[in-house]
Length: 294
Image (cartoon, rainbow, N blue to C red; front, side, top):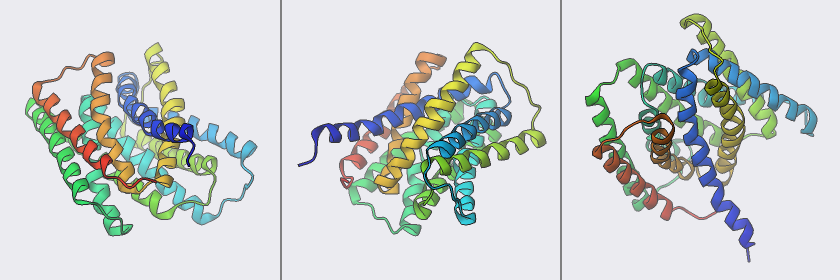
């Protein structure tokens, strides 16, 4: 009989992940209000790479990294931390709300499920498909409402690019697996993302950074709580669950992000927004209820 305490902790971990992941959209908005997006991301992941490098040097038993493992981890870093977060930060810097960008990238389970079926031979039950479609419908209601209110083309497509990249990142990570330790894998991913964002900053943006108290607090939160905490939990969830099951957690991100945005950023919502969030949450419930228990 499984230990009840272990089961309880296992059930709490996805909730912690959703809260941490949702908080990233709020702190990202604060960061891009005080710094250029790609420069701030380069600095963030440069610091994250340094921290994981220390973990790798002092705590990893196997110090060998093959060329293939380095390449695979670098691609994951470019997809997860590079293109995905680059799209999110760029959209936020162009005026998109934290709630809307969280909503756009939360459509990821739709793409992930399709890609998982094609590349990983994973299957979905009828109820899971209905739940995913409900989640997509609820998100679409809010998206249309915000499009009517005014949304730049550049910001919208940046969000879409982030959405696609996050789905590809989950599929890639699940497909390749990894023989590397978590510290080595995350060191390489963060390093590749830092270099990628630095090149974007040098080529495409007028770099600036205001070291306000809000900026320092938000950047520290993203480094320690999000990049170290939430991302490690995501990697653990991908090891324990199917890719389509893990991706359904992202449907919970919009309502949590909306609540945090209301409390911290004072963003406002319409009745259409609340209706769309309710439909999305219902979809999550249906998918989660019919997941295979690990």
